Image (cartoon, rainbow over all chains, first blue to last red):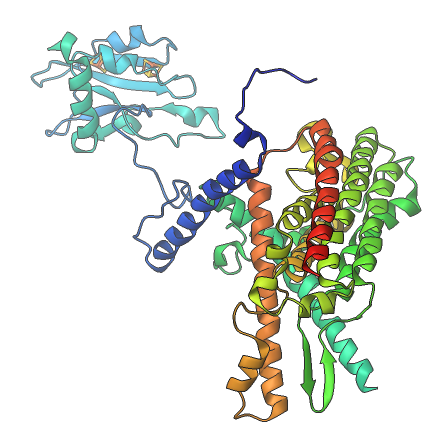
Amino acid sequence: MIVNRNITMTWWERIYLPEIFRGISVTSNHFFRNLIGFIPALLNKDKKRKIFTLYYPDEKVEFPPAYRGRPVLVVDENGTERCVACGLCEIVCPAKCIEIQPDETELEKERYPKSFSINMARCIFCGFCEEVCPKEAIVMSDECEIADLDRNKMFYKKDQLLISKNKLQKRLNYIKEIYGKWNY
Amino acid sequence: MEDFLITTAKVLFIFGLNMGVFAPLLTWVERKQSALMQDRIGANRADILGFSMIGLFHPIADAIKMLAKEDFIPEGANKIMHTLSPIICVVPALLTFAVIPFGGEYVIGGKHIKLVIADLDVGLIFIFAISSLATYGTVIAGWSSNNNWSLLGSLRASAQMISYEVAMGFTLVGVFMVYGSLQLTQIGAAQESFFRWGIFLQPLGFFMFLACAIAENKRAPFDVAEGESEIIAGYFLEYSGLKFGMFYMAEFLEIVTISAMVTTLFFGAWHIPFISSALILSMLSFLNETLANIILMLIHISVFWVKVIFFIWFQMTIRWTLPRFRYDQIMKLGWKILLPLSLANILVTGIVILILQ
Ligand code: SF4
Ligand code: SF4
């Protein structure tokens, strides 16, 4: 079926040959640029290629702070998690995948989660838990390689979720910026 | 006996270069070049002991894979024809090289050696005759597979190839009017001086010939016969293993043949622009005649193949730049544009030759 798209072409475009050369110049421009861009990368492993594609398992992308990977619990300088087991994240989670058992503690925060688990097979990476948390205790990390063949292994326990604060500093700064107008 | 040895050497050279270097390497070139043109990396996973060599082992991996695959013949297919058609596709692509000269004439040890396997005085006609045979390969492949997609593909292929054969024949009439010969060695020798190259004498002929030749080879933008998105793979849909590989090999060999023909007819064959053979020979005059001729021969052979490689690159670039034509556009281009234009080209060439006489 011939669809009339009402494209008006100039005479120059209609003779087609010059347009072919324009197209070829664009593609061969890319070809030669990438060809030359490859050479420094071949000689020196640290040099960056011009091509965006990565050799994925060998090379990894550094995600921007806005990236939402698996949710993790922030561990403060004193070595304990920030979470006070208020249960807000448990309630807001649309996938109902967080389970918390609160308990009392001698520390200043008075409450802590005795067990904290996230069923990563059900998590939808919405980031609501992070947004609702009053203590900035649960944040989205940049880890995304969490696939597994075993469902039971997708059930993350508290010790798998704890990640020290320094590693998450970028995300912590970022969420302060975007959620700041409500929380602070 | 000596003639026989020389001819055997030439045949082995052409055969080895085509089957041993170009056919496997072009599969790699096509992947890698398309990748670079689209800002990708391309084939690089096949490795031997951890060395991937920018993907150069992929042709080997492909060959092993093809050898190990089941040789499948569909039910209800014509077994003999089904087996025969890949061969009918490959042979013409190789055979055309018999008349294409890859160098001039040299005096080595008092013997005149022409670097062409068969110096036919109807070389161009021979090429047409042989390349038309490739049509049978595709038609028989589609018909014998007992598959509707294949039949559609081969119908498209035959219609397209036959229509473009007409235009291709006429585009080359201009060339042999200008050079006054059908013999490819003479056409090549006539392009000694840079401004006698075919591209200057027959500029329109060059573009039309290239278009027709790519259409003959059924590669994008003229690949409706394959048309993966419409008829899956067209005429070679029901093929597997080595037979499938042979269709690809035929396609790649034809690229080389087209490049060699374009080089011979329009781009000065084995000549280097502004540097004549006599000049090179006079520069090498301190050597004895045989040695100088051998060096000249090697220079000419490499110049010829460099030009061929350039045109292979150019065809690949076209293939990965232009989108596929619609079927009616292909027919329109062939019959309504290329055919009248090539006839006009003959007319103008004739008038110019008459005036110059
Ligand atoms: S909202 Fe924050 S503090 Fe409350 S239970 Fe969840 S992680 Fe702990
Ligand atoms: S990211 Fe969303 S789905 Fe996942 S645990 Fe947090 S609230 Fe639940």
